[in-house]
Image (tube, rainbow over all chains, first blue to last red; front, side):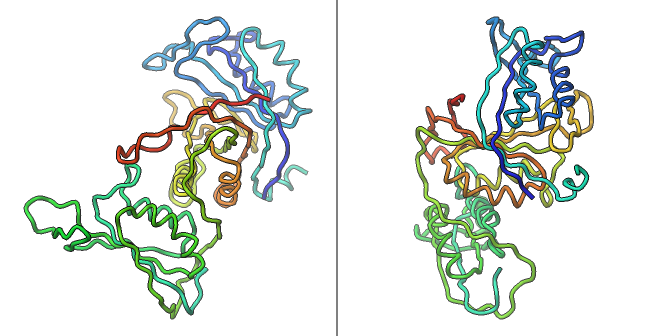
Length: 117
Length: 249
């Protein structure tokens, strides 16, 4: 089954070593998104990059360096994204947030509808 | 679905060593037929033969010949064959294509057919669309990982380029958290496929995505293509070198 809707996509860029209350920032944001029941989030780790501080982030050969660039991609309807924004403002103090309007098509198995109701 | 009655049989004659974008031609053609929902196809390998260049290729000569004849055969309705022919001619390169009237006495059981409009080779510039498909790494389609099947299906349908990304953390439709830890044997990370092409091409491909992706999210956004170039076909490198600048709304 499928459902089609207009959505917004947020891309949040920061470093892997960034923390929020002692916890990796990306984990804290994913937890916040789950709490707000945001439709979906994915965290990507880049292999190289630089951002606001012009400091080069590099993942290192064996993945031991803990300062790779991180990108979170968050997708939901506009009103849900609006609920999340103040939290992101508070949590991300150094980084970049890009927003775009997208058209989303969600595929799901029919039984999911019943369990949701 | 092929029914008993009038149909056409297509035979494509190739050389074993011929390639299309770095992959052997027969497997490119087979993938194309497979993802276009053709009822069935067979690849036959000859033991000896000669073609347009009048050079005898046999398996018995001392030098191991990689130019043995290959023949691909499939039977479909005339309309379907006409739809596929343009692309097949392109894929077959210097090979020969033969079409023969035939009669299906008994059709094979089970087949799926999705008619799709034919498409032409083109150059994309300026406004385009980006399609992102979000699935799980453990999702499968038939006997292979879904992300791999999607890439093959896109390639067979001439989508300009696609890249697969693996997330390190995420959740989606099920609120099941996918986590990819180092030294962790679970392989259920969030996967994202990003493909860039024109609106029509991606819309045309959507029914195939719908058929293959049971659960997942597809997101379409506007992008602007700044550069799309690939090496000449003779170099035989994959044509996945799409570069695009994204227009943020």
